[in-house]
Image (cartoon, rainbow, N blue to C red):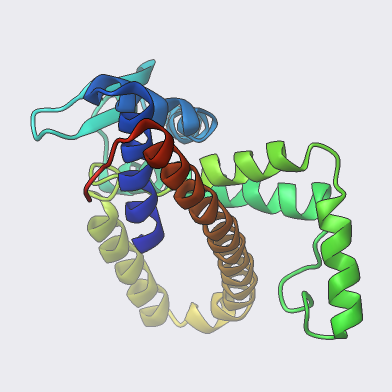
Length: 235
């Protein structure tokens, strides 16, 4: 979240330096995150469809909200129960993580969680790094990871039903415990959750590494534009 906030401010500032106005800055920010915004809203739409929640049109594009913030996209849908609403709100995080892991595993051929770097010597790590840097269309894939990762975090409206979803999950666990069935489902479920958390943590590690690279590039571009144009943005 800290990296996302920093990038949001400085990408907006970069837009101000390039375009000279609030609207231009928002447009630059939106275009940079466009693939991630599409993945975010489509994941809402598809999940709602799968859960049989009536949905309307998908809106893609910057739209000012009453609080002074800007919404980059939205999906209109009918009100539903807390469980389905919570799952729909969680969908962008799951979808974004899956897309990032697919790029990491299929494009960069990165090892599975727990294997990356655990058994590699410094020379092998350096060789692996050279391999990653030689991937065709490297910067396109890095950009996609950056865009998806910075748009996949659930918005405030996405998180509204999470508390209810957690409550119902705890209630279901208590019912299973009361029926004596919790032990039967806990072992396979815990294994699945453990693997899922490993992959989720790995996806976040990849996003942190990519964001760190982007931060360095943004700082360099900011400084160059400030020197050439004689402008400055205060954060």
